Image 1 (tube, rainbow, N blue to C red):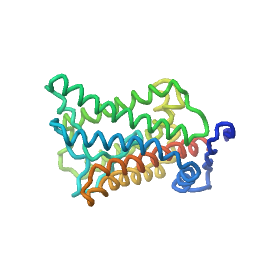
Image 2: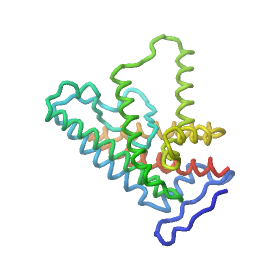
Image 3: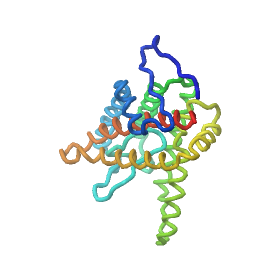
Image 4: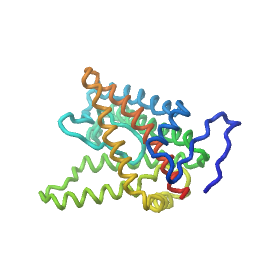
Length: 267
């Protein structure tokens, strides 16, 4: 077991440790959020900023697509803590834009990613009982940028399996979910481990034996993120879904990462 540090001088509430046979993940996350309500603040601020960015995307002349579909249920999960936005800008929309419009659109996308990255860093740092390495902040932000770019490139290319075999589709889904489970802790290990490869290896190692728990968190956070983004469509203000989803799903995801990291490394 690692040593627990006192935080009397900083004024921060001491996070509750999660031990084997102790509280469930959901109750441990809820306990930390009750003990320190300021944990909601970073993603609330990020959600409000993303709300304004969604309004800009809706009103400008550059193509944007909806981030939610009412006809189907989605597991809207990302490796790094974030919510589901009601609008997003496809990579192809930035092609052939005149310079002023291009820099405007690019600035919106950069601001959105930075807001999510900073909120995730602040929430995990606040929820953790051990300080993060300050020099890892730029690594964390850069990783969020690169992953976002990767998903946009994949979306632009349109990679999709169309073989029609249910067994093959299930096998691919199992591989993807297996990768998500083993990489679930990457955001928090990235803030504790040096280098680029070591955080991935640490997440892979620490997640061993916790597959079902991590899978459950992924599904709950993913469906919750999508559902929360849908709620405001019933009051005809869909952009508010961005605020709701980012604030709740982003915060719960970030705090869950810290709780699960504590559990996995304490054993």
